[in-house]
Amino acid sequence: MKINLSVRMKMIVGLVPEGVTVADIGTDHGYVASYLVKEKKYKKAIATDVNEGPIKRAKKNIDALKLSDKIETRLGDGLDVLVDGEADTVVIAGMGGMLICKMLSEAAEKLTKIDNLILQPQSDIEEVRRHVHKLGFKIERESICMEDGKFYIAMRAIHGEEDPPYSDTEYRFSRILSEEGGTIFRSYMRMMTDKMASLLETLDAPGLELGVRAMERKEELIKEIKELKARMR
Image 1 (cartoon, rainbow, N blue to C red):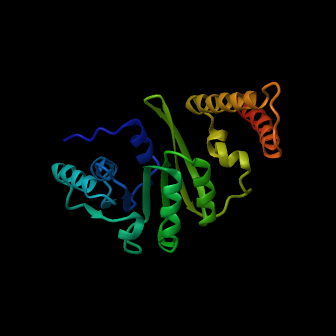
Image 2 (cartoon, rainbow, N blue to C red):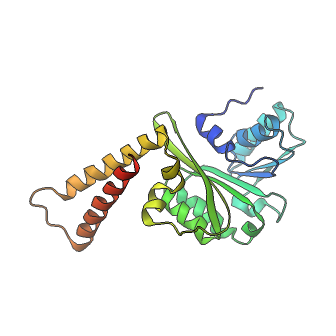
């Protein structure tokens, strides 16, 4: 059996440091854990999911790859299934950003013994960035890809503080990706700029009376569009 990772999954495994013990939370088919052990020669991985169906699928795939002696499957919610210190790297991918924040908050004590968080939220990326900072992590790397016409962003966070602290714009649109640039990121920024310009046009509609918050949002949009255009040069 060959492991065929999607573009999004390749991005995720590319953020996992070498030689670590990985806990793949919400493993689904078990592909990330299996790829790391089989193709990247990692010694051990733990694949977990809150639902029995995905765990059965993951176990079936892991058995077919003859990796059951190196990958343990566990049924349970979030990081509750982990024993302190048995994994130094946690992967949480393909979930909503607020759910990821909730999982991390509920496992705050366990995170003190986790060296790396590999996170790929499907939404609310800004809130995830803010949350990892609140938990005492800093964002070491970010990656972006496009799959089936949709943009995906993943990050690796390690213990530490950001210096200097993030601005609101960096929380929304990334400090690291802004610095690195790249074709996909520029396309993402153009899409975001177009969305904000469309919203600004709505707020500028003739005869529309804006409340205080709407006026504030209008000024924020003008500032953000200006900043984003400057970053895309």
